[in-house]
Length: 323
Image (cartoon, rainbow, N blue to C red; front, side, top):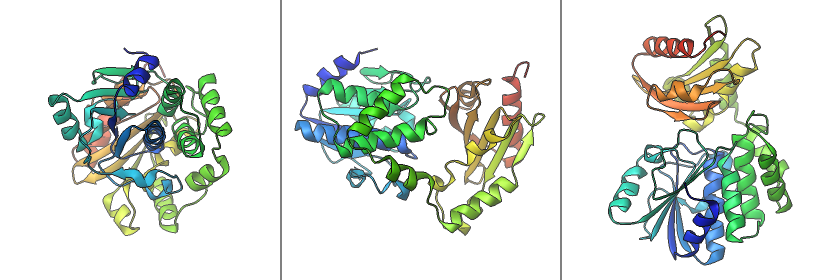
């Protein structure tokens, strides 16, 4: 693996880059992308910031979010992936990334997932509560001061991926990166208000409906929430509106693992996993071709709903040991 200094030196040697972020973008990948893109602007490095889909409306408070496009038009020398454990996490843009590899683009991978495959020529992978902590370290190595744009972007990623500093992988590095972002002008009150204290009536009703039908399995050590396409369409909601549902199960005392199943289409579900720490959900997600972190992972599962629930129940049971 490369050092952050080596990655910084590499970036300085190029004049153009495309920054790739992962599909179904969250606060961490969005924050990484905006912060790095703004830093490259300030260094005079031409760049574009891409994501295969729409950026959730709740992140519209971030300056720089308007830079996202769904496809690169810049014939850049370098492709940089942030917060993606492998090429598949780029969604449709994985094809563009792979074509770039075949055309001789220099590729860089900056990530924090335990399941990262080191898929680029240059890789910096350090397990942290958020990848924005890695980007913060990179920007320091590049010598780019934290202004308000960078600071708000980094703080957004740190807050969202650390569970508002509540996850067990939060450590001194997390707070040091957050402190630097705060010193740089991050507006914590605005960020937390936009992310956690504002929602539509339709989203509120979705939460109430889904949580009222929460399933308790394995002697109440596992909860499974199900979000159907019908429920989303009823409120004119999107996938991003389901964020946070999976976390609720862990607030129940006996629960060790919480799963949210979001119906993508008939026979296909996006499974999000959360663990209190005694069960490694990265290993469970890997059984279905996914991955992520020990405490938070995801994958796609195919089949009819009850079959999918039964397979997940057995997978969790097999990893619970003596619990």
